[in-house]
Image (cartoon, rainbow, N blue to C red; front, top):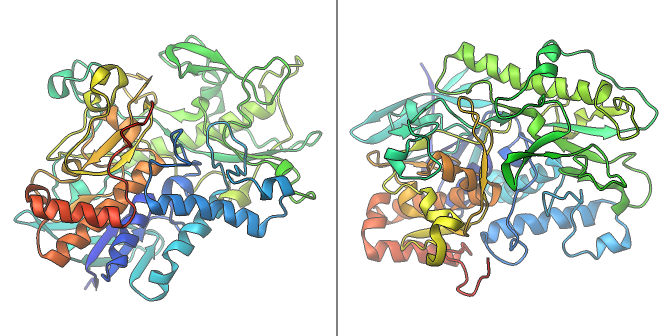
Length: 525
């Protein structure tokens, strides 16, 4: 007989969307069970080791109040606990890693600590029950309502039946959708389906964005920390992507400003002013501290050179999934080995043997993140699907920002598609700031399951901007409040959107909780 647990709301997945969904529900006096596949909550920021990718207004507006609180807490954590220089301590926009891709590049363990602190009152009071090392394996849906989801412990194999009024799928790949018979799409849609200029002529559900198995490095000049040659090194050393004439292990990568061209990079800052990848996603810059606590910078390796696009990890057999997960891991280890032994140096030499895996940074034995970075998920077939026409700066033209009457949040990021698993296409399309329509959070049929991560009603193209940290956070938070509102007012989420009184009341609930629904009218972009 299965163990059974019950709560008002069941949140499957403990990433950023899941955490904020659980927090929003708990703030409304309801009980939550949240599952997490690893022993770290936080998803992108922690177990996947990706510092926040944000827009240029993030220090002033364009996110939820809790996301701003999170950012403030990160900075305060460093100021309270690290021996910062006086200049750094007085820096209101402190960036611990001084990375050039992120305004707040910081250690995954600090993100984990801050997220745990934000949830602490509700976890410690029992209102939020976090089940670590559990993943969904089964679900029962009757007459458009999910009745239960069964989760399994990845260590003991124990199964637990979870029952609740609402089920929020915050898994990284939308894993609950097929289990609960929720209509969904994967991969690339066709031009015929979406009308998007950058869509494929023919849909391909297995043409899914690449994943990346991130790892952490430090550098000690004069030392030799060369790892054992990875099993697949010879393959990756000579692999040439279909869109390039250069091996993937080189200092040439796709230029984000024009993805039809290649751009030269190198490892460290240099007099030739070739862009350095070392400080691209650096999370510790020792120059901001007194003393010598950190003997080296620490950087996270999430580059074009370890984007893995040889095959997808969902909508395939377990054997195929394991093959590609191991392939991504091998690619990252092979990249490290290449950097240590063969990477061309600007002084004419080869290799940087002083590069060392920082196992303690990511809480793993091998120095790689607990999970690969997942960019693209299964996506619900939604009441409203966000398309390229809603977001593209070029396509919007003089129409400006696409405003929705049912907006539940805002975000902004390029339509950023990393190489996909079949066509290998990639692009970086300039965007307008965007809103999150409630219609994109509502499945076309099922009434009590809601998406709370990267699985909302986007296309593959618009997923390229709605997948980033602040937007996923906003999605989870707004979905949590939607579930709570529906329970408190005894309505289903679809009625909230269809009934103007409920919609305005729900939107007021969001605004009272400092969820920004629209961009300022005078914003310049």
